[in-house]
Image (cartoon, rainbow, N blue to C red; front, side, top):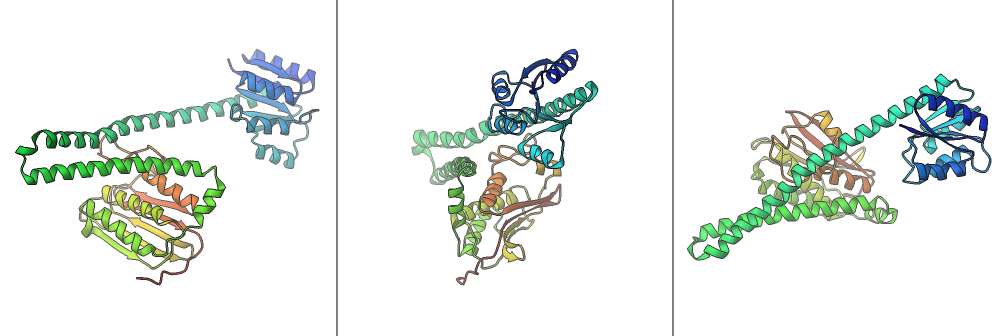
Length: 370
């Protein structure tokens, strides 16, 4: 049974609301003012709160603000009841996080309809969150074991062969095994680095001082950084001949290590999800909107639904298409752009390819170097 908290300093109204909702099958608890209502909400965790605005000691707005500031009660649906539903007051309530207004006087039918609508909306939100959580669990359960075990198995298997049978191996066999161990080690390093960068970027969101310090960083020879990293990624994938570079001399408002990470992730995705012989275009330049880095391919592309679900640990069609990584790449790129005051735009169509553009606002002086 759903529990409803009614906060109002009029005993008669509380009695009426209690009677109406109890007949409808709800459990009703009451508070005569905002201070007691906040305490009851923290103790009882109701499914919905009905609260009057004009009360002594602590009005409805202050009650709402106190509940929204507490993580334990912040998500409880909240309906403000008032006989003075003026536009300014309604706007103020919505800004504080109210879910609905119920003008006084109201009929039992109106009361029940408002409660049902809010509870139904809250249920829909919970179900959507649960679906996303289930998808996240599925993605992690598919990605993590594979991503950790695959390179580790390669390292351990070939290391054991080298340790036990080195005398019987030919030099070219030793070199081949060493190459597998090296590539597996790099894959593990990339996995760990991506995880650490993602965690670092999430923590930055709560530290304005660190964000400001990041935004003061500059890469004056950005063209050289982009070219070197893009060529390295394409070469490692055997796609060096497919790489097309269109780079201007600009200064990028981002530290070199983060710019290199952007290029690595975006170019890596482009070569991974497109076939050999198709172009992978990397552009760096300036236009009327500021400085941009753009990577374009003619690969498998993504649907609008897949684009909307991009996030950490989310991968698409993993059960039918081999992938490497935890799905952190695009999320890291987006967060890097955001913490540096910019943004990321992704345009894609299934079967036609993908174009990802990272933008930084404003303009920087050109690089007068190479």
